[in-house]
Length: 503
Image (cartoon, rainbow, N blue to C red; front, side, top):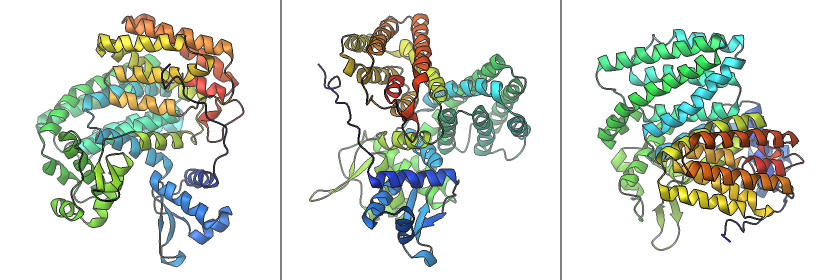
């Protein structure tokens, strides 16, 4: 039996006081919509407000700083000191997803493929639920498409504002988060030029026409038309992405870096971190130390504060790790998604996420993952997926869910789209393994369903695989009538259902 199959069920443990304090402060920032820089209180004030010890508060502050949510500044209450908001959890999650995708050197085509799935579902949701205020906003953004600055960045911001507003009008927090994150990646990576002015203007007019037709379909409640327009937007974006990828590959790092000049220190630190990550990726992540601080400051012409913020970002995403002792320093690693997934999970679990929100996006993304796996995976990978299905079919009741979650993670990687795989991993992280025994009939359904999924996907029978996947989502919706406690910040009384949702 594999080590995965022997995974131990977690015991029910009450959250530590510092962890509870972190959650309370994050909730306050989101609930009160506190802006960046808002002071939550001095150390003394916070200890009194939350009735915690200095040690507990400092543990919580270290965790909040690690999350990128808040930072403790010294200086006392009258001198600008105290715990201040670095960013609301929603912004932290958006930035974490975008940054991980950037640091992982993901290409334009992968982003466009992933966002096409999200954009189509967002348009369909909006066509069924848009209210008068949201529609007025969409009309306003549509009218602004032909006006304003004609730089590539400003045109892109106008184009991306509409999908963001459409996602918001649909009311699904997962769709909103993923849309904003993929938009942020696009703005961060976008080159300053796109071929000739004539090419830029021609592409702008084509996209403007598509987006206006999208708004019209949503206004008319035309769900098929909204989906069709969103797909047309994705197809146009994919064609443009080839030009953008070529432009990015040809641009030197130093040339690309200059686009950050004139912005804030935070923006410059983000760009410096990305330049360092690109440089390390081009050298296949060497097992070595990063250069010394003085040399990096001189190379980039930046302050020590900007460099240290860039290094903090690289550490959060696993690219650098401090090592003490002889031969230590900032050691080079590879990007990992732990910080990204944790940030997204924290936000979504406090965003009033309903089971239908989770399953709607899960359905959309896994349908895309099945299509890409059948199209791109080689025979060896398909055989491994089928073997995993057999392992689930033969597993004990206590092992089924852990193996099923691993199976879905395996499927998400077969289509060679790292953006899509990351978004699915975030969804799976929202759920937990059961803290109660799994009913035998549910375990057997999971065995049968995953075996059939494995067989149909590995046989490259997409129609059959999609049918089984739809049956599975429908069954999960029925199961979740008993509650999906682990999607919220305060787990409810029946956590076993939440684990089933991940499988």
